Image (cartoon, rainbow, N blue to C red; front, side, top):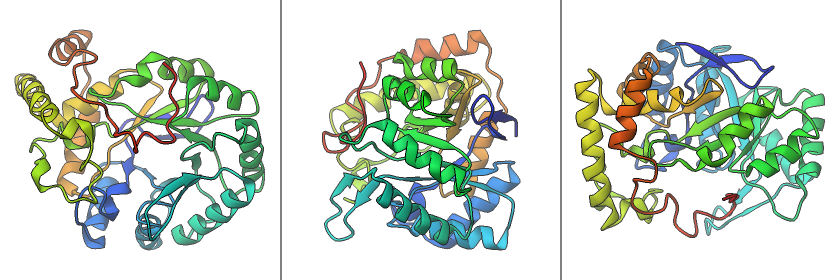
Length: 330
């Protein structure tokens, strides 16, 4: 697997990492054996970093990873997040970026993972009433103490990134980015490139819409993140499936499959872009890794854009509740 830099002066990592949210049931039932099989397949494909968070399964994702890396030391670097609080009983969520909470949660993450330092620590969502400059001060202190190697932010605006970067080095920004979620094209990709910050694309498979097997919303359980997603509800879903079917035909014509082509498209949008597809299937890991091996020409990208032009998706990527905490900027 080819490697890319985590920021202008950051370490080299595989251009694809593994997102580990759905190891805890975010997209349907799973178990630790299946999750560990996906982690093993990732190593076989040259994937060398994992992305998780303190709230994924209320710590379960980090525990699953921790047990795996204990048996496979030194094979993965870990990226995790803090700053989002979810009530274990009501599932209600809100945001805390104060220094005491972030320190407490970081210590818990390190313990669950069984490591003394994480490569990259993100603020999962910003707490609006705490200036980002104060948050950077906290994170820079964690870095000085050796608990984290790099600083990241998830779902922030370009203006917030500029303020943060004025205080100290930001290694990465993480946002949803795929053929049907193009919001970062409107300023975030450009700002990251200008400032030497890596852009880490989550949900590059459109939460399964670009998988070879089309998702069936009638089978979604209420715990499935897509259950109330506007793009997976009718009539939007039928429109979206029709458009994606054209993309799948194009993939076959190009000698590949839709997951690999969707992955290759994301990576082709800039050398500072990395991707963290989320899967618990070893077979899907191999499909996605194949996408990293595809070198798309300008003509290939143009052909994809003709089939799926910017703005083609029906429905918003989040419901109103899911939008809470993500910063808008256009």
